[in-house]
Amino acid sequence: MAKNETLAALKIIPLGGLHEIGKNTCVFEYDDEIILLDAGLAFPTDGMHGVNIVLPDMTYVRENRHKIKGMIVTHGHEDHIGGIAFHLKQFEIPVIYGPRLALAMLEGKLEEAGVRDRTELRTVLPRDMVRIGKNFLVEYIRNTHSIADSFTVAIHTPLGVLIH
Image (cartoon, rainbow, N blue to C red; front, side):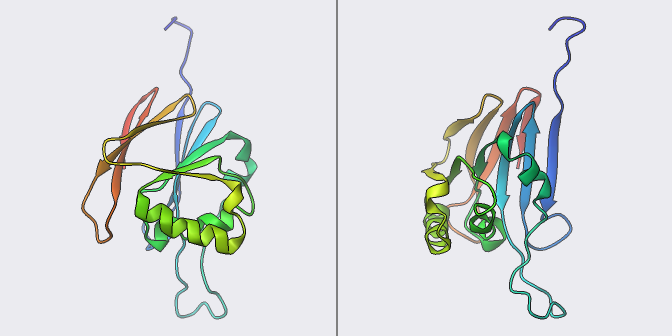
């Protein structure tokens, strides 16, 4: 790299799931590309009368929807996939990668919501490596969780590797 050349910043933007149960959603942005990691929902608390589900604030994603290259799904729990059908009504996600069980669960939700045609679903297996855009290479690592067919991911970027 030339002396005056600088690398773009890697932005990691958690939109939900930190210090709370549910709404697990994270944005990874590098240069002009965004990938999403999960897009879950939360269930309302007792005081939220008339509310059926709670979604994270996706304003940043909607405003930058032209940068979205794809989504990574780690497993099929509602707090990780439950918001995807709602979000697809507001912006397209070109491709969603995930384990077979999670994508089977998700496909039914997308069909029910009438948004199945707004994305492509691609099944991944343990040790698969998937290129998303030009800046992200995602490696799928089997893990043990309370739901079958669950993954940890290693997200390789120009600035290093992130484990989630």
